[in-house]
Image (cartoon, rainbow, N blue to C red; front, side, top):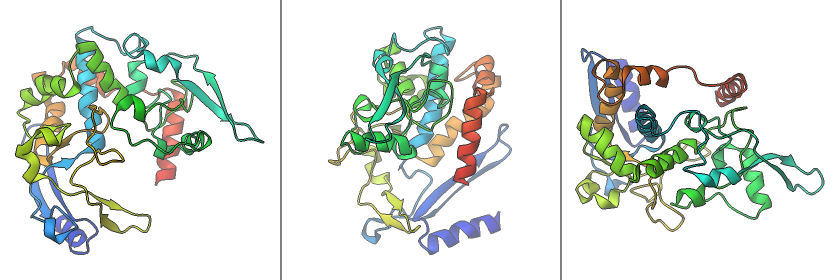
Length: 314
């Protein structure tokens, strides 16, 4: 453990990272590690010691919680994993599949999608939806239409481009779980924040967590600044104390189920621990649901694309 901590301390000392909190536990509670390193900002005037309760934008860690919420609705038979989602999200019915681009003009070639988009496909990044920054084809489509990648804080405005492939036939990291969060809202009539608070956070004793930091003045003094690693590998201060923000610096107006929450490491680990133990205590899901949660879900085409993506990323 000392060698590991030395690596983290060295990363802080060389400004490779401003700071971090590391928390780990196991199923039966016989192991627990929690320690914070560094400071909350690359900017000295803003910096304070990083702590276990420092609040951060946890971005895609939100996906796990949204997926748990969806499985709860499946348990209650309010939705199923394999029925079309258009009853609740009719907007997705009109999404075309981007088949390519005309050779001479570069005009996008689009066709209506033939296979249904289901909750299972949304949760496993197999629906055809892709984040703009993760897809060259999506960026080319935007360029043809004279658009930049959206920074809107409204889900339906931000993620409204075409599908990159026929649902279920490939894999792309994308906003499927953001749409799954919208599905939770429309099925339950509650915001995703309300639903998570009542059905996850309160059950697990998670208090310092929200989609909207401006609504929680008690968390303001605990917020870490944002920093970004540029193309050269250097980490720099962004000037923001929160994200997700739109181009005007405004807080997102929608609960982004794939990327929207803010919390601390010591709070989020409570969710992770609950996943480890819920086959026994069934606090957040039944044993059958958690088994389904970890069962392989991807078809052959999706698995092949995911493996190619992982090889390229390495």
